[in-house]
Image (cartoon, rainbow, N blue to C red; front, side, top):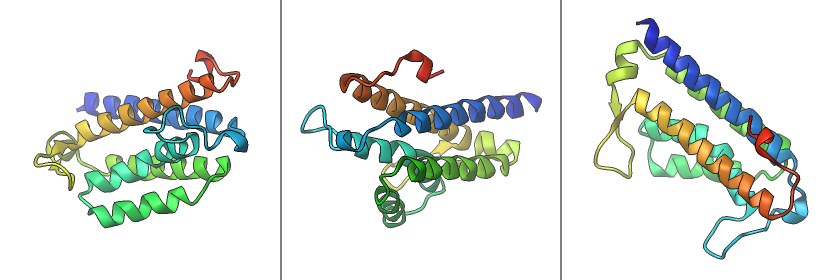
Amino acid sequence: MQAVSEMKGLLFAELEHIVRTSSKLIAKISPEHQDYRPRDNMRSLLELAQHLVSVPSVDLLILQEHGQPEIRRMEEEINQDSASEKLSAWMDKGFQDLKAYMEGLSEEDFLHKSTKPFYLEHGSVQAKWLIEIVTHAQHHRAQLFNYMKELGYDVNMFDLY
């Protein structure tokens, strides 16, 4: 099915775009703003950036049904970095690993193989996982953008496109 391949390609292109634009936003963050937190119950700017860059890697582990300890180890490893270059490298590596995994699936598995995360009773098919990862990363990129706007950074919609 050519349509499945084309749809994967569109989702990969969108996620690659999110990775690239997220990296550019993260590179603009001044160290003195890393502890900025809009409210006490929200992540700091650095914590948000670390979570955003972890999305491809961590979500890949989750969809591959790895356990919570391994996922927490990956998050802790990413959270040790605060330099924009290192954070961008984490996100790019996660994207490349995710893409390799998804491209390695047969069309049948991409559309019908269901995997279950440790925290839910039900699973999702691999195609749905890929869509979820794209929207998850896009959501946190938008949060990062908003934090930066609140701090007065010179960012606008062109930083997202």
